[in-house]
Amino acid sequence: MSENLDIKAFLDADEKKDLLRLLTAGSVDDGKSTLIGRLLFDSKKLYEDQLQALEKDSKRVGNAGAGQIDYALLLDGLKAEREEGITIDVAYRYFSTNQRKFIIADTPGHEQYTRNMITGGSTANLAIILVDARTGVITQTRRHTFLVSLLGIKHIVLAVNKMDLVDFSQEVFENIKREYLALTDSLGIEDVTCFPLSALEGDNVVEKSDRTPWFEGTSLLEFLETVPIHRDRNMDDFRYPVQYVLRPNLDFRGFCGKIASGVIRKGDEVMALPSMKRSHVKSIVTYEGEIEEAFCPQCVTITLEDEIDISRGEMIVRPDNVPNVGRYFETMLVWMDEQPMDRNKQFFLKHNTNTTRATLDAINYRVDVNTMEHLEGSDFKLNEIGSVNITTAKTLYFDAYKDNKATGAFILIDPITNNTSAVGMIVRPLEGDDLLHEDVPTLDLPKLGITAEHHEAIAKAVAELSRQGLEVKVVY
Image (tube, rainbow, N blue to C red; front, side, top):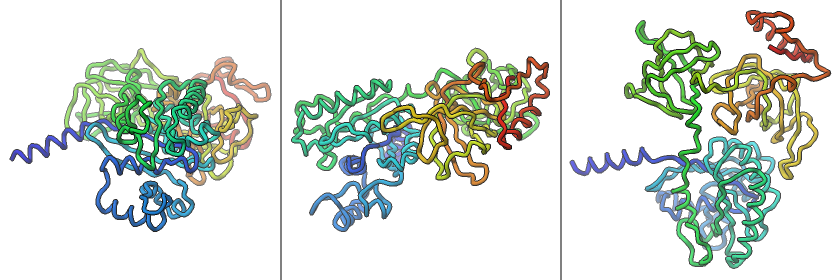
């Protein structure tokens, strides 16, 4: 009986551990896959069959030297990856310690696989940027750091790997650290921690190394177990995109969805967008029953005191804390499609539970991800990044990505192929003079005396003109 209680207590404690999502990025051969493999191996998180397969594969296709285990083979699962000794696809690995659960995304270092890194980093709390101690901060390091800052990842670990090849020199480490911190300061990244490592030999990965007595920090694993991430989520701005209206019987009408950000409690006053109707939370229902409060990223059903018409794609917020409401915004766009951008095409834009048509109005600039220089705008090709103004057919409820990831991100979908054409991070809403271009005709509806009941018909007409290659700006 006591054994059953012990097992149940262990499972309950394991379920309550928080989860750290992290990605690794670095240049080719900096040792990303080796570092994660060593992390799994030294923390005793591999099964016997995995160890046997790893030893067998190391003898057959390993690159660590005679008799050495090639830990990178734990991550590089594709045949092409093993043949070329590089990472191509994003490899995900899960493991846990007594303190925390981890999901690691091992992302490719090649510039041609930028979209893979964006995918792997979209949900990450922390990024490990690897550099080779022999080469230091290089162009790829700057590119990966820029992409991490673009994704809004708040915690960065600089892993100076292969310290064994520079005799664990403190001077080498400090020079690299100084140069990298100057880079992160210019990008506005505040939380950066630097480690001297040898992933192949295990120095400072799971245990502190005797070969770096001058390093006063912890091991990498100990840092990952303790880095605070509970404040990374936006708990101030309540945003509840409605996914489904639940009506199992005449006596119950609830709004289902995932809380994008913030906290909600029973009895709180809320407001529905776009109707602006107000009510109070009557109950918060989950699979286990009613609860008094809920917070992101919980999935719940909310019922209200009053009968308000709310449907999928609309949003419930607090009356004193309302997101941007509009159809025009500036965004940082990452092009993910093999097909180049076609600005005459109308894309589907998926934002939370809302899907609408969208047009790419203006390209402000492209970013050279290696130098971070702003280049003259032109149509994007695969993996290119830049600033783009977008207009949607329907009104969206959004925040700037830097303030709220959940309501500041979206994807563009090709209406013909259904491929994900791009991912976007909203920078700011556009209004007033931002929308007016000398060479584009403008319809100012208030000045023309056109009321709101005709706005939808006008939006459809403007969308049809856009499909025919004719651009018209509409001011509501």
